[in-house]
Figure 1 (cartoon, rainbow, N blue to C red):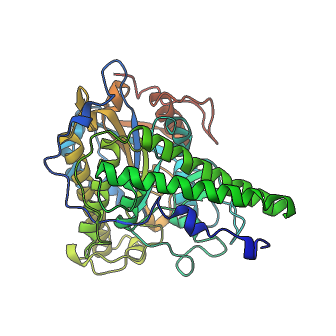
Figure 2 (figure 1 turned 180 degrees about the vertical axis):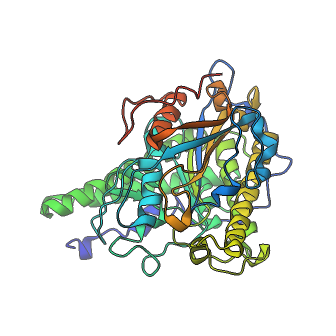
Length: 444
């Protein structure tokens, strides 16, 4: 690196944009902003992904029947109340991988691309959430929001020869730029509202103006350094300036929307003591981000691939990843099923609040599509076939819930991505190994 003494600390630029959190909870929030711009004629469309690692207890996931009368299986029971807005998709495959099975599971989930085996020069593909974020960012302060519950492992429990970044994210801005999820609720709050400590409009506006003056200074100083830099450093600085310009865009958007009514929410203190409290708080922040239209695109990893997290609160003190290699042992299989059920119970917390939150002529759940699933099916076999996937939400009238749909073997998951992009109003012709949209996911 060459900018040494002349360098502008990156922390300085990002200070006002993202760092902290601790939330009272969102029950009873029925604010006037719920109907801001959402109408039957021009509905706001939102998309989110909730990802779970290490596969699934598939015998307890997949129903026998098809169509809207499918039976609710054990794992789906926590979200049974939303079957009228649910489409369970069976039979879709991820691209196969011969190495880095967990890195591949996470990376291909939204990109349809297996990661390049490397410790440093990462390479994958743009993810479906980021295709949407590019389009929706013109309307919101944040193009997308990436959340996680595990801290970012940078060594240790990762696939041999593959950067740990691959197992830490499912979201890719482009083929070389992964977007890591934030696991500190305090930091998420600051990302959404700044570090003024609350959602008070006057405090937020003052912070925005301060951030803008910092950015003006940083941009001017970096610009004066450009001439003496080598090609690689100029590329890095250009990427950095692009990030600065994105922050400036967000500040301008925030100033234009500064008179918008927001719920009164105080900044959270940090990561809660238990996994369930942590997950619920992050889901509440996600709901708030959608509710205030700060973003319309999100990803949320309930744990990272190869996660060794334990779940003593549900009677599973065993490490998740070793347990997922159950070898068809009934005792281990039962523990995997308990973990899977627990994750879906936490997801139901979000769905319940989304259905109870007014939004235009309906609810938030009516105006979103949430994709819940895993990047592998049978964890013991690291299987990429027949991935466990369920869509929940009304999609602003663009997605007609179809119950359980079973697709033919070798249907790629990227066909689902094409369909989602189409329903969200951002159609593309092809994505990775896609062969066409899933026509059975018809418009309502």
